Image (spheres, protein in one colour):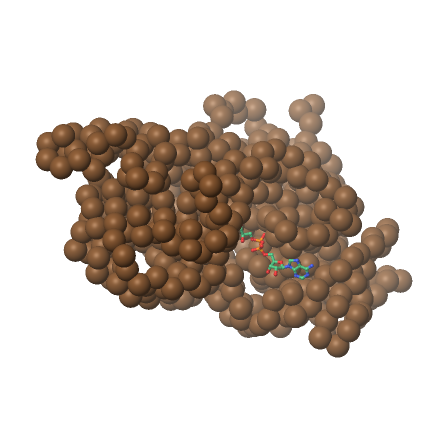
Amino acid sequence: MPTSFIGEEVAMGEQTYDAPVIIAGGGPVGSSLAIDLALRGVGSIVIERRERGKPFLLRTNMTNVRSMEHFRRWGIADALRANDPVPDDVRRDVSFVTRLNGELILNLPNSYEWKEPLPFAAELAEWAPNEGIEKTMWERVAQLPEIDYRNVSEAETFVQDEDGVTLTVTGPDGEYQVRGQFLVITDGSRGHLRRDVLNVRLEGNPNLAPSTSWHFRSTQLKDVWANGAGPVVSMVYIYNEDRGSDLITAQGPDTWQYFAGPVPDGVDGDDWEQVRELIVKAVGQEIDLEPLSGGAFSQRSLLAPRFDFGRVALAGDAAHLVSPQGGFGMNSGIGDSADLGWKLAALVDGWGGPGLLPSYSIDRREAVRFIQLGSEANHALGAIELVRPGIEAPGAEGAAVREAVKNDILDKKMVQFKRMGGQLGYRYSLSPIIWRDGTEEPPPTFADYTPSAAPGNRAPHRWLTDGTSLYDHFGLGFTLLNFGGLDAAALVDRAAERGIPLDEFIPSEEDIPGLIEQYVRNAALVRSDHHVVWRGDELPAEIDRLLDIVTGHASWSAR
Ligand SMILES: Cc1cc2nc3c(=O)[nH]c(=O)nc-3n(C[C@H](O)[C@H](O)[C@H](O)COP(=O)(O)OP(=O)(O)OC[C@H]3O[C@@H](n4cnc5c(N)ncnc54)[C@H](O)[C@@H]3O)c2cc1C
């Protein structure tokens, strides 16, 4: 088994590497991948152009339930809650108002966050702006000696050969090269490595809506709001005839994000003075407004034709862009890290087969396309259609219009909030490294999550009678969930002989009936990223074939 720590050159046969995995771009996706690898004992060098501790503002606001389940595995779910910069007196609701000093149309309490544990998930979503997310990741990175995170370093270009990839970097002391067995490109939507070095273009819709997003400070906004449409919440949609639709989100004490997409005709989203006028209209009156950063951008829905290119893989925004409607951009990239992490570790440690990286493309493209389609549908139900004549009219006339808008929101827009299909429902139904059991299932829907233990799905979750999550019992490799007294020795022993990490978990007697009901079989084999790869009442006769398929040494075929 190779030693895979960084800090000294790692010898692999004739080859030497600076680290097993090089990661170009240390945003949320590159950082989370480095953490996943480190927890498996696999070292990485992360090349990041930003200075140490300088997070991006105005990006992800919500780490969704599925991502938080991975954050829990990575030991950062509680830290993210602690690092949330939004003050407690800002309620985690979503509101719809005419203006901040105007009329409340609808308030949805705790729309992105729940207070009580969910039966079907190991974690709750967390509303915390990107600043808190990146801080949390970088604190974890600093705790893990397997990660060599290099700031103020520019990934310039790379070459790959049969045995590895060499990346040219410009650091504070000049140009140098790092060599790894694998390179993962996580340099975001504007990175040049995919486009200019790999020569790969994204496909899809490059401009769903020209938009603008600004981070600003205001000490008066909260008071104006609380005296008007109140309550002051983390996310408010503003609909009025004067302007159309706007979105304001809480970013920290007295700091806010203004978002408009599409921007009104003739408005330059890079021009603060023009955007300031839009904000004043959304608030309903003049207040103190200090711009911090921002500008124009395009909402896009784009996907790379594949994510694996030999020893090079794409992840996060470098591989796909998702309409922000519903908050799935970063969350999709976190899903990439979770899928890619164990596959790269398996290859580095020698038990993974040649099908693993191609399966990364197939698995994640299926998941991301599902998310993109749902986000595009959210986008199509944009708020502009919910702006109606008379929405601000006084008395019964205006109240009737607002009531109609409220009913339309409840009817059409709720899929964006607290609906779990998009977060938990994607499955790897096309994957060649899943042992199919013949179960025919209807396609997943973006609105509703229907738990299923059919291979390829996220393993149905359960809180066990001892208070732990079922997921807390999954190991770093495969976990055989044994509910029916199955003699698992043949599988466990053969996996050990082949160097494949595989543990057996036998739940307590009180938990077994419920689990059999959920899994509909006596046993299931689950990956560390929580996806079911096999289920059955008895082990298959061909244990080696099962192990070959789930480790990428063979592809599934119904024979
Ligand atoms: C205005 C805006 C609003 C958004 N709102 C949401 C939201 O509400 N919810 C949501 O889920 N997503 C949202 N997103 C998307 C989300 O921010 C991204 O999906 C997420 O940041 C992707 O993470 P990443 O790590 O792939 O890329 P990035 O976060 O872009 O990170 C890429 C990293 O690579 C570094 N880098 C780039 N090139 C190089 C190089 N050559 N050498 C070294 N380093 C390099 C960059 O400095 C950066 O740190 C939003 C995005 C934008 C722009």
